[in-house]
Structure formats: structure tokens, C-alpha cells
View (cartoon, rainbow, N blue to C red):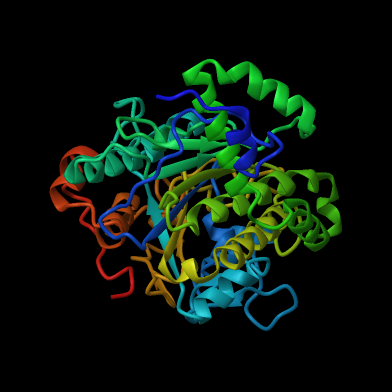
Length: 418
């Protein structure tokens, strides 16, 4: 590896270290389908699926949810209608528009194989792709990318993880890259030149600095993240004002993800987290704590579509959480850890306008362990369908390395457009 000189760094056009150093080289490759883009968003904290996608047509819904129940479509603060039985939370206006445009599939009564109620273990199962917590130390998405890399005889990065840490779902044998927004002020030109001179004599450090500058150039190619952050902050309801700082960092990641994915020579897969879905107390209904977070999520997804531009037509976005919440409210006007929940598949590449649910009902005898929405669909069936149709991951890889011992979770077909 040749030594890189200062002028070569500065010529890259990135004069501020806005992000942390990358953990791997910024060299990207293609999946089996070179146009496809996939975004996986982990909703940490256990999303209340009965609030995000309320089954208002279920005769037991209102009585079970009590003060958290959302009203029928057409009422003040009522749900946004989908198919006459299910709706979306009134905060999810972009998702509703996407459903109308046939770019959204809503899955309900869905869960990973995990059946306990630990966030830590539930997230591990969600990301490791097995049926047990800590059974493997790598992630299903990384193993899927590894199968594509080995099949094409390449070792370049197919994916990017955005955030302070690379999540488990992206750890493993496949080479991936990462980017994180810095909490530090941007460096002035003189300081950057001094760092460049210092690193220029070391091939490894010079390469890492070059990677960081290149990554920031990509991330900064989007419009100012603070402008979008301010727009989201303005959209939040008044009771969510203490949370106004949180969506800013989230939107920064969204815009950076779009900056990477819309490049022809960039990665095709991006992963990042959203947090704050653990609504034990004061969850709210059409307004309140959960509503504010859903507003921020919805606005971020709208921004993702806008920033991806033409690449949106080839994009699929999967949103999933570790488990759901209790069907009934608790004593603090919230919900506790549950089992089944809702998941979402969004994007221009999605054959949407559908709700897919083998609905178990919310009557007392239908609830799982007498308290939770019963799981009837395995989340791995959705993930298999997306990976096989969108990224062209082989069936053999899906059944052996990506989701081992998952024969009962058959892929859901026809989730993507022809």
C-alpha cells in the first residue's frame, strides 16, 4: 500500500472530520442484484404493535386497550385506515401515504423465535438469526452478505452500519464499513493538514484517514442534517419537546445512509438503530410519548425517500423490533414487555398496499399466555423473502448459514416488485 500525501487527502474534498474513523476500508461491491438497496432499522425497546398498527376492527380491541385505544378512522385522533380492519397510528402519515402508493406492507402478529421478555436477549435473537439468544456471535445480515461475497469471489464491502457501534446483525465474516457522526466540532484546515502530515508516513493510518475523509464526503453530500432535524423538531407535539434533541442525531444517520446508498459505487445495504420504544408508563394514544417518537420515525423515513431520489425505486426498508408489548394496559398507563407485534416493509421496490397477518384475535382465550398478542408469523419468513427476492441470496445459504435450523420459517414470496 503506497503512502498517501497530504494534498491527496485535501483533494478528496472533505476538509472536516465530521465522523469517527471507519473500521474497514471504504471499497464497495455489488450484490447479486446491483441496483437493489436494503435498509434494516432496528427499533430497540419493543415497539407496541397494537398502537403502531391498531386492529380497530377487532371487537375486543377497545376494551382491552382502554385509555390507550385509538379511535376509528374519521374520528378526531382516529387511526389512518388500511384495509377496514387494521389502521396506522395517526402520527404515521408518511407510512400511510406509502401504503396508498402501494409501497408499504404491514405485518402483524409477528415475532422472532424468542418467547421471553428480556430486551438484551430479545435483541440478540432478532439480530443473530437463530432461535436462541447468544447461540451465535454473528448476525444474519452479515452472513447473508458473506454468502454473496463468497459466491462472487469478492471481499469488498457490501454494507454500512451507521451509529456509534456496529450492531450484531452486521457483525461477522463479511467485510462491512461504518460511519458515525462526531460529537466534536469540525477541524479547521490547519489542524487537518497537521494530522495529515502526521499520518502520511504510516500506510495504515494514512489509509484509515483517507477512508474517514471519503466517508464524510459521502455523508456530507446530503443536505444539512440540522435543517431536516429542525423540521422534525417542529413537527413534534408540544408534550414531546424534552425529546427534541433525540431526532436530530437520528435524522443525521438517515441522511448519511441515503448519501451512501444512492452512490453507484457505494454500499447496497445500510443498518441503523432507533431507540426509545420501551413505553412502560404514560404511553399515550393519539398524542403523548409514543406519538412523538412515531412522528420522528415517520419524518425520518420521509427524509430517507427524499434523499435517495431515483434510488428509492430500488430500495426496500425493513423495520423490526425485538418483541411486542402486553395487549392490555398496565397500572401506569403504559404497556409491559410482550410477544407478538407489528413489522414494516417499505420502499419503491416493495409490492405494497397490503396487510399480511394471520390474525389470532384479542379475546381472553386467544392471547398468548393470557396477556400478549399471539405470534402467528415468524419474522424470519419476512427476512428470507426479502433477502431472496431483493438481494438474490440463495435458498441454500438462507437455510444453512443465514438462518440455521429455520426450516419451519418458510420465505414469504412476492414481497418485492417483479
